[in-house]
Image 1: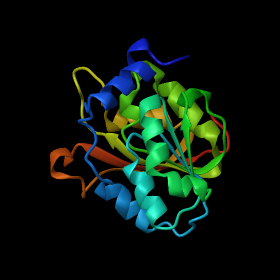
Image 2 (image 1 turned 30 degrees about the vertical axis):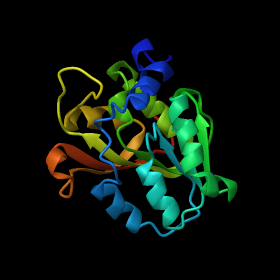
Image 3 (image 1 turned 30 degrees about the horizontal axis):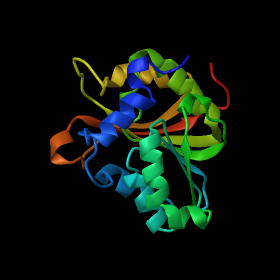
Image 4 (image 1 turned 60 degrees about the vertical axis):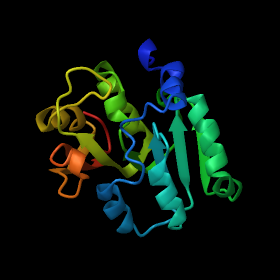
Length: 203
């Protein structure tokens, strides 16, 4: 399956070129900052798909993490990120890939979810879950934020706790799926923090 035509490279590159990025809060989100601050292994392999302006990556790199991979379908965006993170890329701490996430191959300890899931057409959600599981090492984690809010049309596309439980449970142990207590004001009560551990096999 490939992305819907509406949500391809051209669509997202036009959004970035025209600065139509209302989902971007301009900095790392509070829940992810708190989560990153308790991670001890700075050598772990971390993937951030649909990375956008990569505020999360900036925070990780500035705090000594050395194995970050960023993927985005927008060519304009990845070109900007290669300039933004040039020093870290040259040092081997970061790699930036212009690619359709569903074509990516790799093996990671941790994948960060931040406004990527909600940008995909809902018809792709089951494929998203399978792909996430396939990219994680045994015991690897998918952590980050999902919207706890319905949207009449998207992107973004929302969801609820029951839907997420049914969707992710076949491939992940749902360690944490809780309403965030430290979201920004505009999203207070509308975000779940997730910490899902890959199961040994899907079922």
